[in-house]
Length: 83
Image (cartoon, rainbow, N blue to C red; front, side):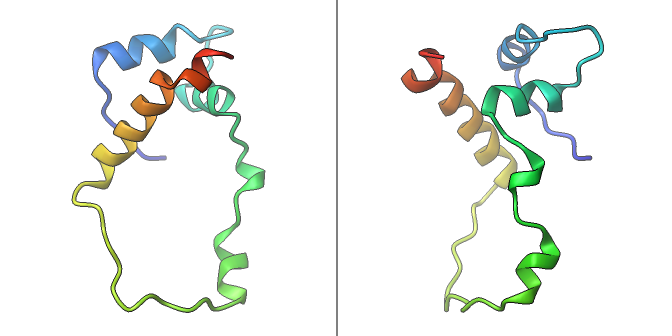
C-alpha cells in the first residue's frame, strides 16, 4: 500500500462519499472511479510479451503531484458531476 497526500478539501470530498463505517479510502476511490483491480494487466502478463521500447521516455517531474492533479481534474470534470 502506498501513501499519498491530498489537501483537506479533496479529503473531505472523498470522505463525503463514504457509504458505510470502516470503508477505506481505496474502496471509496475504486467505487468513484469505477476501477477494478481485476481489470488491470498484471506484471507477469506484461513480461510475457516484450514491447518495443521508445528511444526517449518522458518522465513526469513529480509523479505524485501528477496523480493528485489527475484526481482533481476528474473530480471537477463535468462528466463526473453528471453521475
